[in-house]
Length: 532
Image (cartoon, rainbow, N blue to C red; front, side):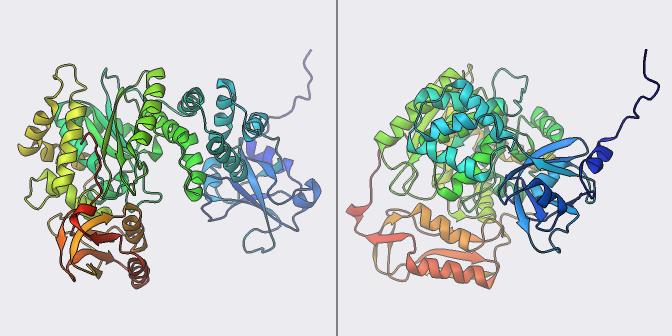
């Protein structure tokens, strides 16, 4: 027999309001905490006193049936958060998907289930497949604080992951998000491990390879520590933040795209880990392999060409180091059934002339248009990589891909395909023959006569960032000299472009400390023996 006093169903919002003494309401605190959920309570808030919270405690926030975990910050200023308010950071507010003023509750959070496994890794123990799955699941679910994330990154770096652990980590990162299926037997992609300014080969590879007919959906990241990422440079030409359904439509029609990957939810744990790896300048081989391969496999790639540049100021400094990294990539890729072609390339200096979004977009369009002023090194490296990608096709004999790629470029088919992709993604106003560069300039000239014997990739990137790139699209460096070039005292090495006086001043100070160029004798030019 049913009770006649059945309870009336309670809405999630009403449940939130009833759960909090005094009725806390949500407040969006406009602070970008970069992949970390942060909650804010006033010190005089009744809930703060009653629950015995402490600053940096892990708390559970609930609103409208949604629950997130967050790190608690305590404030004393009512202009930030009032006594009856529960503040949340930008990331946290976006996840809750409710308006300002919505009823919300906060309570003590249970520690993540994977914490015991994390502690074992901190102690230097080897972890198994289930351990990595649990840790990555908690990382993707934003259950780790920045302190716990840092502990995991440092522990993996200090006691280097063995190759089986790298496989476990990669597999767990793939499983943490969505995996795209393009319903094609052959989907190609290309990735460079980074560290070389101006290396915009991807923006050239996509139209060449797509014009040949292979599917090449390029989802790229924005710059974190570089003067421009592929997405930043493509954004000069077209929209890159595209709804996923629109993205798939473009790929079906054009066989390729060049878009920002942030909306696709691919290997989300990787984005969270990067938020602590970059500030610590930690890029251990195991974490690099897991990061790159998880993103590519999640993006639906079946065949990947991986570029490992080596040089005195590249991420990888020697051939033995490059070969060791190559073997690790190949082992994990084989376990995950990804066809991988690793190429070791010349990383002694920047590729192309431009460093910064507009300048790099100009270089790309010069190559596509077969302009005589196009950077020869960018064109040559692109054709070599395009040849390797085209040779992924079973219809192409090994060694013939380069000639096919060159024909596609020289015939104008690559330019036509790029124009079609730009049109489909949403064209931006950009005249590559007269690019809109920063109005403030600084000429950096040779201090003595001789030969360019060294160009520091890191310093060139740093000066470009200080000049405002990539935030200011027209900021950056336009390089006039490359390795082995003869110069006379006072000759222009590069021109700095900036949008603001303060940015130009910062770039000037850095260039005066170290221009990034070394002038010496021809025999002092470093040699490197690479595949191309």
